[in-house]
View: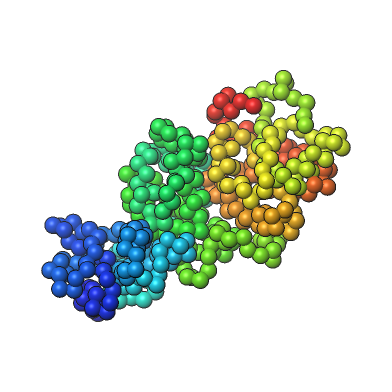
Length: 269
Length: 150
């Protein structure tokens, strides 16, 4: 197994302009851009530990430095995010070299990850997926009225910090629906159900790559990930699409499609 | 389209109907011109195509206290914009399941294809949808009713 330091050096010598990975900044792991193969910073790069929305960072980097090529250390979720972002025309995969990092078994379990490894692994060992569906099952076991009460209670803790949106690698719109006063009343905390959270859940449909950063970021412990994960299950069941998996297939909600598809959909309904 | 207003009370159900300009709105018009009877619980919004209806609109309608939301447009293959209703068909599937998971009765949202010639179908859709919503009762999300007006 190769070392991250060597990989960074190798990629930089191979003609990549910068390597995005994590670096130890006085005890805190932060995303860092390494541009020089001989930099002393190389001693501080770290593979594991923290997680950041690499996709989101790369959207900005690719825009800020047109013509430059980047290498990036990706976990399974980062790779899915980048694949989906390229379909949404937010990143150019031709200008990216992904260096795969497999999450450890502990990380995969703690995360409840559906696929804790990227398609090509350069670092780490492939761990088993440990998808956690407990919350979804718990909700599905409730009656309709109880379910509504349950969700309302969860969302009533929201302090509208926008952390879920800000950390989300798949959120990139300049005009955010969550800031539209017609959809989400300004100054109302917690935001009125179903506006804020259901709008976000709908936007995540066919887009969420199940990285779980939203739930990690949420100071109110709202089970956002289970909500978005359920939306992906609906998407897969109804429209046969899973975000971030196949680079050539776009989300059915992003194009009109053919009459046959729709007829099939209506028949199965 | 309806004899009402003065008699409405708080417990009356209210339905918001998004009607596409080219088919369902004309269908509703035909129902009216044909003097077909149907319950006057529907508030309609004329849109150019059902494909323009963002799922946000439906969420907003429920939030504002609507008890049911109907989306009616051209039959598949007959869209004035060729494929606008394909999007509606797909979004509807997702939206209805999402409502179900959140505990909002899926019956409160309905999608129907009504052509400009189907005045009778329009009246029937409104009759059966009203009946279904009446069975479900007022929406559990209804709160801001007084502010909705109209």
